[in-house]
Length: 277
Image (cartoon, rainbow, N blue to C red; front, side):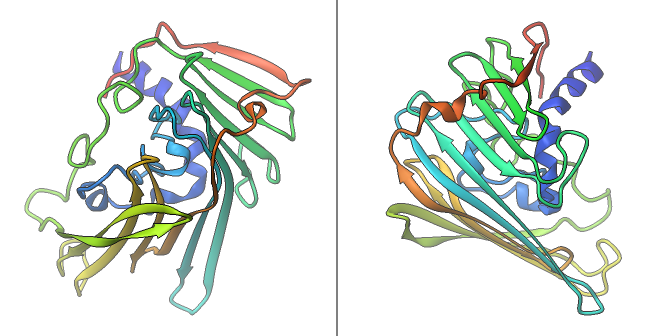
């Protein structure tokens, strides 16, 4: 049963892995503060409020439209710099529907060809998750169970320290995690609370001859219940930044949460499935 359950969950998770945000370590996911990026990508407070499985935390009465820009930069040992940038349009309406529209540039895969616009919609009112791409003009509608899965709207929300990945092997040193609060600031007219986490992996813990130190800053809006900016520096993977820009608070166009006319639609009924942590 657990194998079947995990297979179902991967339906939701597959499209979110394209961003490469798996660079976040287990130690970083264990930090405190408001919900934020999950090691696999987006946490409940991340882009558009999308959770690990492509669902979203339901936040009503706080509609917005914005752009979410993720930039990943890594410098190799020979000095070569690899930069990937993902720009997405995100929105939420007053009923808690969320939308994320992203151009698949440099991330072509089996779900959507390179250059296609991939749109993901979570509709808690209709209990549906919708995904469609503009190149194939096809859409899939997942009919969700009435009872929310763990970590999704109304369910047991994932919190730091719960459901984390396994730590280092027995006998090795666990990372040292230091957290601190930062003075509030204003981004796009919204007050955000800041936090900084420093994770130190001791020399020898994973074959490293020197300590590995990574840092992450997050700026979280309690009103919108989402992260508006984050920067992570890790010597193993480089720098990853995420920022919400052009934030407009107010009702978005209802068409953003609908499949365009003329698309071939396939419905997948998941109401008989059981979701477990």
